[in-house]
Image (cartoon, rainbow, N blue to C red; front, side, top):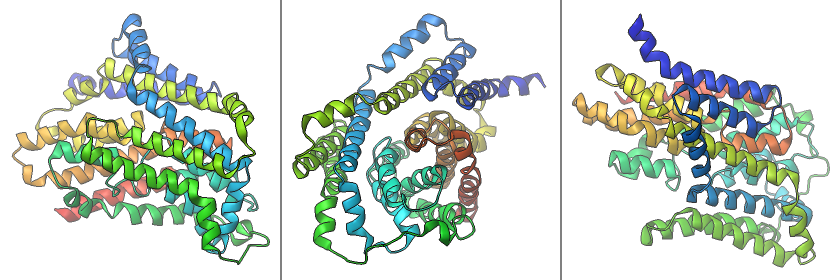
Amino acid sequence: MESLITTLAPFLKVLFAFVIMLAGMRFKVGLGLSILMGGAVMGFMFGLAPVPLAKASVMALTQEKFHFLIAIVGLILILSDAMERSGQSKRLMSALSGFLTSPRLRLIFFPALIGLLPMPGGAVFSAPMVKTVSEDMRISNSDRAVVNYWFRHVWELVWPLYPGIILTLGLADIQILDLISYTWPGTPIMLLAGWWFFLRPGVLNASELVVENLPTKRSKKAAFKEGLPLLTAIGGAIGLESIIATFFPAIPFELGVVVALASAVLCVLLQNTQLGLPFFREVLTKKSLWSMVFVIVAIFIFKDIMQAAGVVSEMARVAGGEAALFASAVFLPFLVGLVAGINVAFVGATFPLLLGVLESLGMQDQTIRYIVLGTFSGFTGVMISPIHICFILTCEYFQCDLARTWRKLVWPCFIFFASGVALFAVLK
C-alpha cells in the first residue's frame, strides 16, 4: 500500500495543482492568473523553494521561444484585425461563398486551412474568419469556438512541418513516411468525430445554418486578390520553414513564420492604404491584445516551473522499470500533454523514457507501434487540455464560457484516443 502511494504521489500532486488551476478559471479569477496559481502550487508541492520558483519564472520570459511566440501571436492579431477593419475578411468570404456552398464546409474550411500553418496559437488566426462566415448563422459562440479549435488541429499527426513530428523522428530515428503511414488515420478520425459531435444534423440543424442571400457568383481572381494575405502567411511560412530546416538548421524555424506573417500584414496595408498608422496605435492599445500576451506569459512560466521542479522526471522515475511500458506509452504522454498543452512537451518529455523502456525489454522492433500509441495518447491530452493555447485564445476571442466549451471536447477526444488504442491493437 505504501509503495502504491509513493508511486502515485507525483501524479496526485499534478492533479491537485490542475484542480487549483481549473477552480481559478471556474471562478473567473482570470486565465493567466489561474495558470500562474496552478504553476506556483505545483512548484511548491514538488519542493521548489520561493527563490528558485521566482528565478524559473523570470528565466521563462528570456527564452527565444517565448519571444517568437509573442511576435507570432501579435502579428496574427494585427493581421486579423487589419483584415476585419478594412472589410477584407468580408470581401474574402463573399468571393469564396460561390465555391463554399455548404454552410458546414464554410465553418470548417478556414480552421482546416490555417491548420496547415504550424504555429502556436494559430487558432486565433482562423477565429475571425469563422466569426465572419457564421455571423448570419444562429449558432452560439461556444459552438463557433469548438469548431474553430477542433478543425484547426486535424493535420497535426500527418503534416511533416509540425515540430512534434520532427522531434519524434529525431528521437526515434525513423523516417517521416514510416511514421505517417501509421498515424494518417488520425486525420479522418478527427474529421469524422468533429462532424458527428459538432456539425451533424441534430447538433447543428439546417435552420441554424441558413445564410441569407448567399452569393452564387464565382470569381477566382477576386478570391485570389482578397486571399493574398492568407496565401502569403501560409505559403510563406511553409516555404520558409522548409528552407530554414533544409539549408539553415541552426536558425529557429519560427523566424520563417514571423517573416511570413509580417509580409502578410504588409500585404494587407498595401491593399488597404486607408488603415495607416492610426490603425497600429489602436491595435497596440487594445485590452484583448495584452490579455492574450499575459496568458502566453503565464503558460511559459508554468512550463518552466514544471521543468525546474522536476515534475516530469519524477513521474518518469516512479513509473520506470519493466512494468512501465503501458504507463510510458499511454499515461505519461497523456498527462504531460494535458498539463503542458503542446505536442513538443509530451514528445520531448516522455518519448525518451518510452524508447528506453522498449530497449531495456528488447522490443525495438515494436518502436513504431508504441510511438503511434504514445502519439495518440499524448495528442488526446493536448486536445483536452484547458491550457492549450489555441483553446484558451479561441475561447478568449469568442468570449465564451471556458468550462462549458471544454465539456464539448470530452467525447470526441475519448473517441480519438480509443481509435489510437484500436490502431495499436491492429498493428500487433
